[in-house]
Amino acid sequence: MRRLCDEGAIEAVSLWMGTRTSRINALRGFCREFGIAIPVGARTGVEAISRVLADPATAVPDLIRGTAKLLVEEDSTARSPHNPVGA
Image 1 (cartoon, one colour):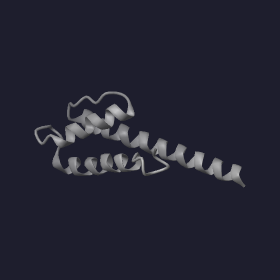
Image 2 (cartoon, rainbow, N blue to C red):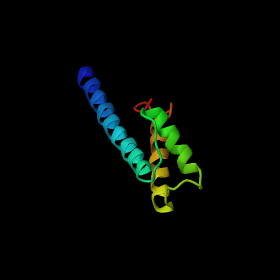
Image 3 (cartoon, one colour):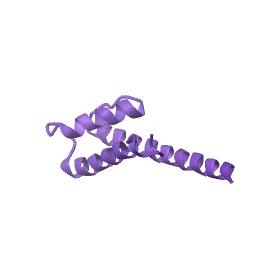
Image 4 (cartoon, one colour):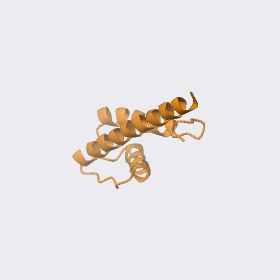
């Protein structure tokens, strides 16, 4: 039974990581559409995207900015040390 639980947890984390990667790449692509280069790497990418979205002077339209901020916040919440899956 323990092995099944471990395998389930591993699969859940694997699925979450795949979704996270897709989300970060989508955000990176949105920024690229507006001439903003985002570095490679999950952590550095999310940090750079956060800075871009926090700066109202960047070329990202408000319509996309609000949704993108929600995605970045979701990623930050999921990686919280209080979340055993994202830790």
